[in-house]
Length: 375
Image 1 (cartoon, rainbow, N blue to C red):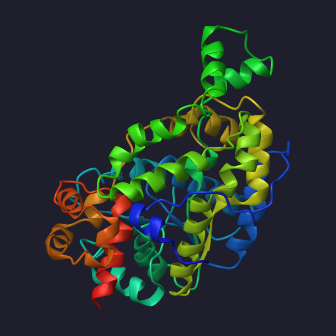
Image 2 (image 1 turned 90 degrees about the horizontal axis):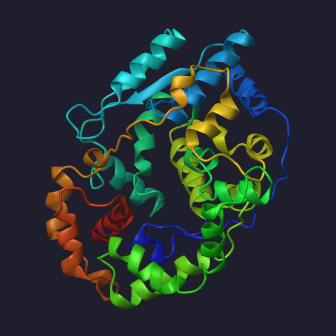
């Protein structure tokens, strides 16, 4: 993989599409059968682990992998869960316990990394020294799981947010495909879409850039231009959006590559079921042009009958900022030398941001990059 660009390091954002990823054709067959084709060979190899947070994506992988293993008389998958007692927002044990109990799994690896996954800790710094800047900024979360799964395969839910999301323009797409009667909502959506390019740069600066206060003015302007260009081609219909854009997103492909790099350095294979080409093509076939309005509806259509319907529903999303930005990060950030990138940064804004209760994950790559320059 190419090195991250300066703009990517500064913003923590990877834009664009990976042209090396072919545009797939929609497939009308059952999506879950694609996972069976993927999972059986992996389960046959031996120990197969699932990075299991209790969220909807990791729950789907664990449930389907368990069903497949039992149907084929293979060793059951082993969930691996990172738990962070006392970290605000990171508590998902109720969901985790309910899923594992329902599946009646005999083995469950529960790890408590404590503050070892701090962005300036030994784990993250060791990876930076070895591989340079990696994406995403919290990619070092893979390390404790890869260590435990050494010699086996680790299934990770990267891509679930993208592939299974509800279609933001469902109403308009459904109207144009004849699945919904024309109405004012569809007309407003059509007008908004037709005028989207007008004033796009101003909207990017107004709506997005305030979330990146640490960028110097000229970098913010360059980033705004890049954001507008990134949205230049955005198919209306859900199946085309998934096949032509979503599964080719650079940030998704980059995350896959860097997670695989980290895991393989610990002797662990990784697989990403949501981004399996056969699965993506079949999800597109299930979506059609209109798609579904919500993620729960998408998941219910794709995984109906495979596990309890309640698991499809939205739930409070956990966040793990406190596991990556601990008091250690706050102390180091106060004295971190930012002069190597001073011309691209608003140093005062950056330090104020790092002193806030929850610095954005977008700054983790920048923080680790600057730390790496010290060594």
